[in-house]
Image 1: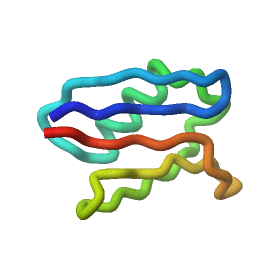
Image 2: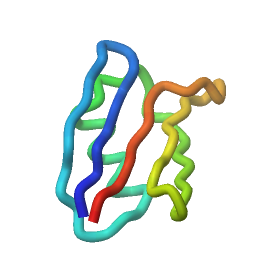
Image 3: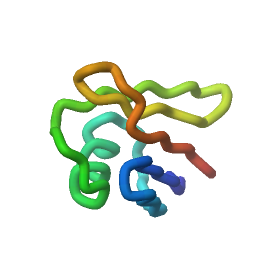
Image 4: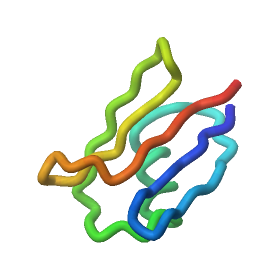
Length: 69
């Protein structure tokens, strides 16, 4: 599956091909390419829409992601 990541700060976006959707894999991609200020991130995902949100420790929305099969 392909995951499209968007980080709002700096308008950073990229696609990644992954074989298993889990938070560890998503976080690794975000930390490596997202230029985020903290490693304390929270992910939420809706299986119905295939879309997720990336929030920081203050529960502020800093980005989003979506999956494509």
